[in-house]
Length: 91
Image (tube, rainbow, N blue to C red; front, side, top):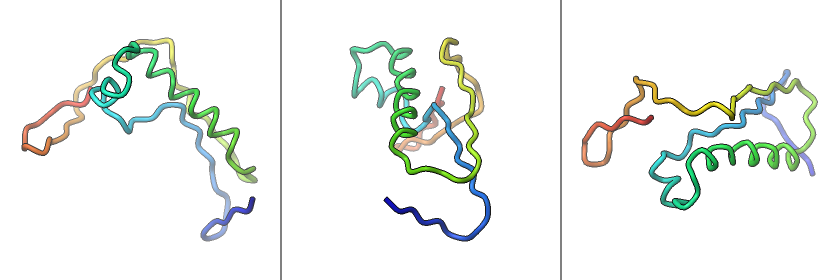
């Protein structure tokens, strides 16, 4: 397998075992019978699989520590607008 990079220099591979791409409602639509805390921990498994299949990397690698034992708590300040124009909080 070959890989190409644009430009030159050192490239950091950042490993972040948490993904913010799906909202809580989407997660429950796909796997509503599994508790949310268990689904959230599944992201770390996906990151481990991705690390195993990625080609080797000559640059530095950093892993962002994500506490999986702690319960997630809502934090104010992140807002999105739905297609109907209503404001909705992403917590």
